[in-house]
Length: 500
RNA sequence: GGCGCUAUCGUCUAGGGGUUAGGACGGAAGAUUCUCAAUCUUCAAACCCGGGUUCGAUUCCCGGUAGCGCUACCA
Image (cartoon, rainbow, N blue to C red; front, side, top):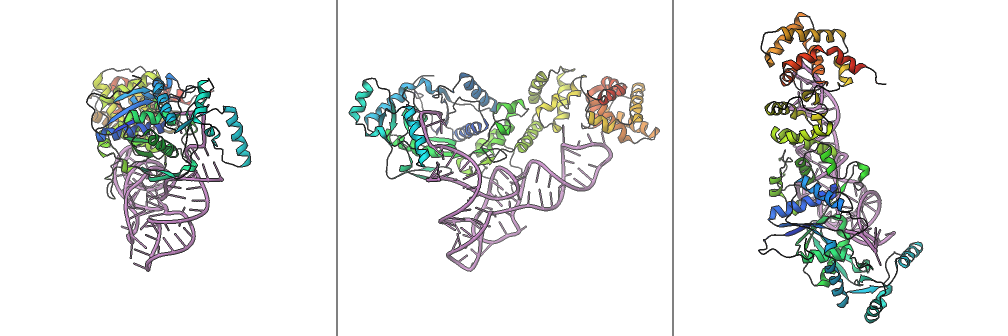
């Protein structure tokens, strides 16, 4: 964390990009997507990703949020090559930058107070004029300004924007974007307390860190001409700008807490696996190049494929709605594809959070059971909720399932009797053996096998939905299967007791 | 208000001067009968509006509309 950036001894070739979050909140969905695209771009081109914490808003930035952002990036598997640098530790550089601009005449001291500005702004609004800084202090001569400043008068430093002409840049996503200079006001560079504003610190850092491509949200498009002007005033070469369309909520307004979880780490807590989230995010506003007309099933893309395929020209121009249903679909696909070994630690974390003590800790058994269950999982949470009865004997039956499959008293009696049959059978307890016995038993009692199977499923798992019954029995083992069948009536009573 | 960006199924999107406008998620229906949150099959579903250019526009141009963004001594 040196106050000044020092280049590595052998600078690697390739582009230099940065992710520059402001620690005024946790890593949110939009920020994560920006980080992901920068990461993908850097990895694809063999470039360098720099992490820079933009904490010049002293009031709102906290160390806790810095940690939250790093945690979010780690969860998503996004690593960086340099940093994190903190802007608060590079203050001297911004002041030098401002001083340079002051001497070159690109900036001037502004002695207006916050209250004066506020007053003039509201007056302008009342008269229907644009609430723009009208350059009051620009009229002060450089000598007078310097003298007053030296005498201890408090002043901010403002950029002396051009009054005529226009400023344009070629955006890698949106193409050429042009703004009339008359639209740009004399924005503040250095606050009166000596802390730089966003525009100054960003450009100073991007120049110093030799950032070649600025990949950031489209909400910065309108800021870009100001920054282009700053690059020019500083005599620095322009980077490539690539603005990313924004992510919206289902009502097409900007994604916010209103729409549910906006911090990425909340998705971990909801049982989403990081690769699924990353895959989902990558496809929000970007399409891989080879998705032609007859190219189905190319949407499941692992990190290596994403890196190989990613490029700036697949980025779309329009904002994208965050589609939770599609995220959940990616999650089921990834959970299904994960080997049990990889799933187990994630599932154990869910158990820990749910206070579930697994009855078996034998790894082979755990892997087999996870493999049985994972094709039906929609979230890691399922392993501690709807699949709970596989791993512990303390579970609550789903009342709706009991109502649907165990309402019949005869079915319940027969299940108990079935359990006794299993207990008395000398046949080995196998998938086909248990099925044969059940079907014979049903025939003998002149019952539909399905009624017993469905009832038994609820008795064994507490759920109306689960894998094939006889596979469930194998997962549970003979002992637990028999115990639960024996306790059929108790289970039904437990579920049907009206909650008070 | 001013300035900027954008506009293809509900959503993410492909495409592109002549196409049955393609895919994915979601939805619906059917199959399976041992449940469905699994699996398989099928179906519905879109080029914002108005002008222009053109033999022909969803595609190119202009205007409108709508959405979003910026308009701070926030970032």
